[in-house]
Image (cartoon, rainbow, N blue to C red):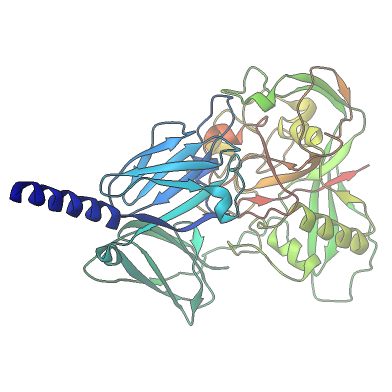
Amino acid sequence: MRKLLLSLFMLFAAISSALAQELTVKSFKLAGSDLTAQTQPRKDLNNRNCAVVKVQFVGELTNIEGNVIMPLVKRNNETWVYMPQNTRQMKVITKNYLPLMVTFADYDIERLESNRTYVLTLLSNNLQQAQQSQTLTIRYSPTTATVLVDNKMVKGTNGVARTTLPVGQHSFVVACEGYESEEGMVKLKASAPSNIQITLTKEAVAIQQNIVSQPAVAQQPVVQAPIANSDNITIPVKDGISIDMVRVEAGTFTMGATAEMKNPDDDEKPTHQVTLTNDYYIGKYEVTQALWKAVMGKNPSLFKGDNLPVEQVSWDDCQEFISKLNRITGKMFRLPTEAEWEYAARGGNKSRGYQYSGSNNLLDVAWCGDNSGSKTRAVGTKQPNELGIYDMSGNVDEWCQDWKGAYSSSSQVNPTGANSGSYRVCRGGSWGCIARICRSSYRYCGTPVSRYTFLGLRLVLSE
């Protein structure tokens, strides 16, 4: 009887211990500024880019069950889980805790979206868990700088930004207009908080590619004629700011995953013949922060600098900007159609059949994940393409006018994309992208209200 009672007691103790080791979801949310799903993509069984769920958990996570594209990626106290779009739940299996089923709709995320990154933070009721997080304090100068930790903005006050993070390794970026950005890694230990002191240095030279210096005299008239120079025009806007544009002659080309485009996605197929019957002008550079500020009176960008491309602007924001720009200049600027964008990126009728815009060597023509230092760079500082247009690969993605739709194999004349949809097209790859995403045929998209640190715009003007 004593042995039986002892056995029952031990069994009860084991069950009680197991029940005590339960996991709970602290938060599950979309990480809008996290680029992992775009910069380190993985395909699902339908050859579409997955979503990434970053599971943050201090403990031994042994498996994730559900609609998972293996393998899992372990990064200290974070596990990256690649899942196809429309996935609705996952089951978390750990060594010392009971399994946890996470239904995304319980956290206001009905289903995962392709190319998006999410963060799932788990907690246990073990009091020792609280000892596995630590405080990171970043003191920075100048005090107007922006601080990012693990690709997320940390609000600072009077030059001090403070955040609590899981123990382990984390990345940081400190950036400010007119200064050289600084980035690095910091390893948080459970034993003590970590402190970093960052003092940014001023940029040695400010490159002003599309800022035309003019004396501060009488104000320019509202409607101004372009300044012509062969196939290039310069259109003054206001306050010494102008727009440089390049003529793209009408022509016919093959759009989509042509032979030089390596590892194409399904949405780049089938290839099809497109004819553009009218010449048009396209921005020599991506729209800069100087131009955006001159028109809108504010700068929404994370990485500040007059000659850096504007970012964190939605498609809807771009329409408002263009409307105001047209009132100032008396012109009819607009976003390019997807076909106009790809034709110009390929070099128009001067195309040499490159994979990227202007070269088969991406680093010659683009600021991307391999050379950007995790930030945007001044426009026009890489080599141009065959037409003399800069940064159509890399730096920032660029909004197009079209709704995103499937390609047809039929020949088309002046196509304008799908009649309706949920996503607007954007093109070109960005400062955080791997090479394949910077190809001239690669297609990306976002909702009309989406704002990202890797997404800006380029203007078009019809003849």
